[in-house]
Length: 302
View 1 (cartoon, rainbow, N blue to C red):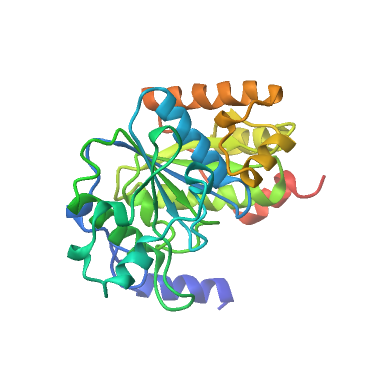
View 2: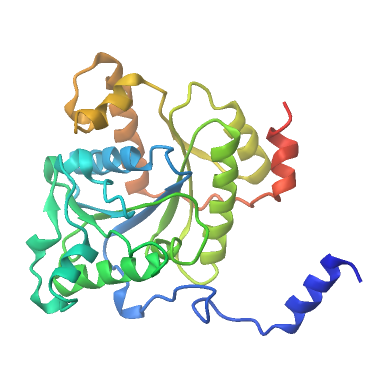
């Protein structure tokens, strides 16, 4: 019997577990469902510009007159840095400060107003090797609901760290209407996008989340992404070039909408177009992930 056959035999002998049981997934408490708001979860390879994308998309929604809440889901707690001009305390920090007696907290302890009225929350994360990011996301949404902070919110954006590699990182997908993927026009970020497509598809079996599409970031062209899209059914929602002014925005603690560089005008308009399109609703693009070897065959040997 080959190794592959042995693995398949073991898999066949194991009982199938629904989403959330055992160590396979982090199951969402039905009482924590976010209702009324449009919810987007932003994923992508580490360092690809998810926080910059999320923050400027939040501002774009606010420019359309929407009430926006951005939730950073990274221990670095810098998702909302350009919105608030500082590193705000995380939900885990403030919970720890009251010995995890959540009833002692006030909204102003963990929700901060950023540029153009965008509300900002940093979920933070457990100490390395000691906990699960899914728990942190759950506690954050629980606090927001207990303080009625979601009732008048139009848009919620989860900015999620790195690649999806476990149920904890995938937890925001349990709340989201659409999963958005940020990728550059290169092999590594497309490889990560393929894994995220697989994760969203898995969550879609039990939750309302569907794939929205890819936001191409820091890229002069889109030819590699286009090839992946053609092979999988993925679609491009927006394209942002590799401009030095965008890189400088984080150094200046500013969103792109606060900067007056002439080359940023088309970028600002693209964010506004993307926000309006997402608000009006985008259909599930029903992309199908590729096997790892197939991605190498498609993109890896030019």
